[in-house]
Length: 401
Image (cartoon, rainbow, N blue to C red):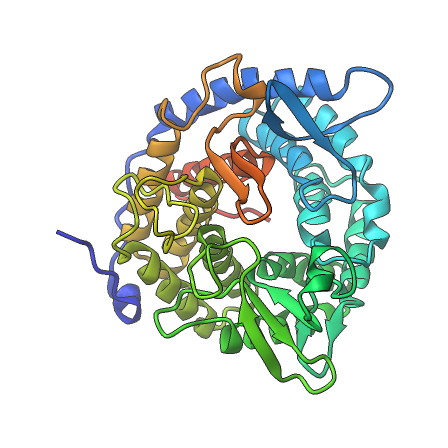
């Protein structure tokens, strides 16, 4: 029988405190110790600390500091410190974080939230390191330069360069941009300047208004007129088609609105997250193991790629959503995803996969980039989900300050 989520009734569902499945968490931590240590050794060999992104054709692929994924490996090392308490991980996390120092001044794309908060943000949260708070506030200032007041949104990409410069867009905003709002909320908390949080709320509201279809799937790209604020068109960049439900976009959507509720306590954001969850789990193309195909509307289903990164993001979001709503069904779904990702179907054997934890993620099929490979952000959200799972099962909030 297909489980139906009823978002408006979610608050009436009493949470069931599940017995800790510490063996699953501990097993994954022990596995991650081996895998990520080999990545640490490889990335720190030589005179320059490098940033591992993926593993392809038998080689670790490294990215520059201004790549959108540059903060995830540092974040994974901070999560390993949180999971183990071992200072080895904190020391290496700090090294991989501080090579990103210049990113606080980056203004030419929106992913600074991923890059800085996943690295410096976790380091500040876990170790309170002097100077990290200033980096986060400076990064928020840089991100705020991309806010377009007439449209009420943060512009994701510059429209006059790269492949997107050929699309005729003026102010493209992607659903992924919801993930950068955490940086802005924290910057207001740290600085006392409410401007950052106001920008975050405006972006969340406009995205809710313009990015969603009636079934609560999300478009990937909405292009605005930056002068009038009007929507010029709705598209995809990484999905199967403009009208399809790209899996990682749906994951960012779920995670983003759950996170915005954490900072605002405004129930409309929680309701939106629940509606997104309803779309995901009532979708006939969601596989039984809950690891999505790369696009829910790909015509090649079931003979197409799964995306473990989307699954990990969804699981992490669901643990937080279960806490805010009291709906134990969300945790059950998250647990199922973690069990699937912990299986040999998705978790690499020790000593393989270049040291990355998870296999079978998809970056961008339309761009021919990172197809059916490990990705550093899949590992990051997988470790985050393990932390949140453990916290809930100890009777704690899934997200700690």
